[in-house]
Image (cartoon, helix red, strand yellow):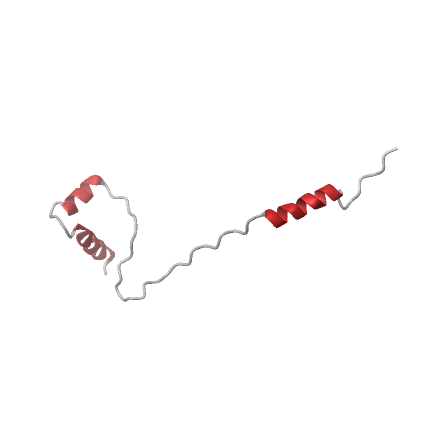
Length: 78
């Protein structure tokens, strides 16, 4: 005759749970967002632009990133 299952779970289940908790890596810490320490410091970002827009700003040569920045400032009303 079989005995009824225990409510607390089997010893194997308890051992597997203990092993899992002991071997699971802790979640990595999220990177903190740093604010620029210098006033008006530039921030490195990635942005996707249409090729014709990029060509427009690059056709005058070096300084195209500053020209894009100036256009964005003007559009933002800054």
